[in-house]
Length: 281
Image 1 (cartoon, rainbow, N blue to C red):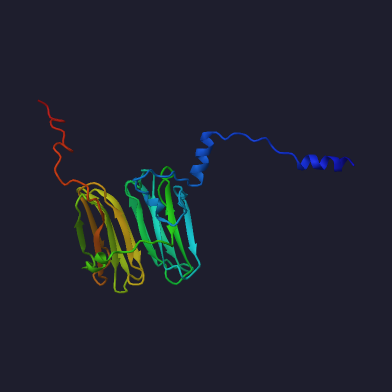
Image 2 (image 1 turned 180 degrees about the vertical axis):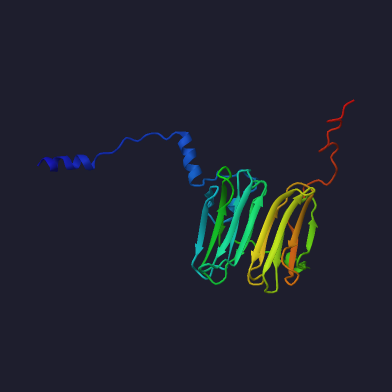
C-alpha cells in the first residue's frame, strides 16, 4: 500500500526548469556548428558549400595532431569535395584517399598561410567504392581547422578550363599571373593515365607562398585533380610544377573562376606607400 501510494508521486515529479545563460547558448551553438544567418547582400562563407540545411554548418573541428575520416560505401559516389578552413590561423594538413587495405591512390599535403582568407577547396575522385577520405591536422594543437567533406553539389571545371589546358613536361613549371579583379582561380591537372606528381603554389610577391599543395595521384586520367584557389588582393601568381620525371608529362588548366567587376583598376595615390616613413631629414 505504501509503494502504490508513492508511485504516482515519483512518476509526477519534475525537476525545476532553470534559465539558460546567454554564454551557455553561445557554447552550445559553437559545439553543434551553428552559423548565424547572414545579412542581405552578404556573401556566404566557403564552409557552407555543402548540401547542409540552411543555418547549419556540417563542418567538423579537427584539432592539431588528430585525424578524422569520412567513409562512403556506395559505389555511386564518384567524387567528393573537401573544404578546409581556420579562424585566420595557418592551415597544415594531410589528405588521403583510402581504397581497400594499404591502398592510397590519392594523397596531398596542404599548407595555407591564412585559412580564413584563403580556405582550401578541392575535388577528390572516388570511383569504384567503397572509399574513405582521411584528413589529418599535422599542425600543432594551437592550430585547429574545420573540415567538411560533401558528395553533393561538387564543383566542376568550366569549359574554358578544359579547353585551355597546356602540357607541362616532367621537371618543368608554368606560371599564371592574374589581375587584382580575379577573386578565385580554377586549377585542373590531368595525365594520359600515368601517375601525377605536382606542386601547386599561390604566390603574392617574390617567394611569398600563400598556399602550397603537394599532390600525388596514381592515375591522372581516372583521378584528375581539380581545386579552386582564393586569390584576394593584387599580385597573385599561380605556379604549377611537375615534380615527376620527364617520362610523366601532365596537362594543366588554370583560369579565373570568379571576377569582381566592381573593383577599380585605377591607381591609388599613396595606397601602400608612406612618404618619408623611415627617411631622416
